Image (cartoon, rainbow, N blue to C red; front, side, top):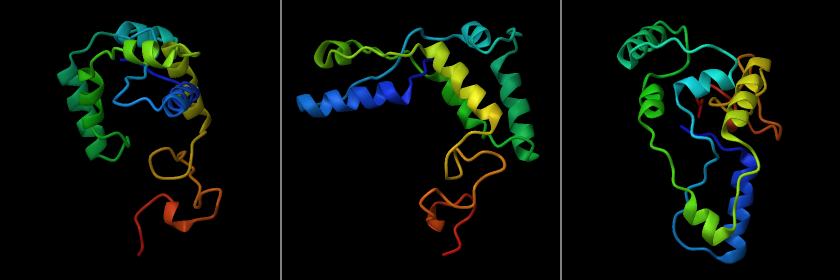
Length: 145
């Protein structure tokens, strides 16, 4: 799998708009990471475990409300193809500024610090009840209206 920094995505979007580029573009950074590369990026050691075993454990932990990650995310992560970014590079003159492994390490470090954003998907575990603009419609949790 590959990770891409928001700044690199924004750069690609600006280039698409400036050039009025039509059609789809794959935006991703190198290197493409396999399980061993992900472990290295996170400063850990890979312990080979069959994906079915990991999925079963994740499903049990999710069902027990021990982790917030639905097992379908694992399915997506283990089945995602490497993206060919040659069209974006050629037509947009785009090259990512941030390496995929560095983006992953920064993202995981931010999660560990409790950094996040408003809304249920990126809200830190302590959470904010309102977004910075104060709109209660964007608060984490079930809607009340």
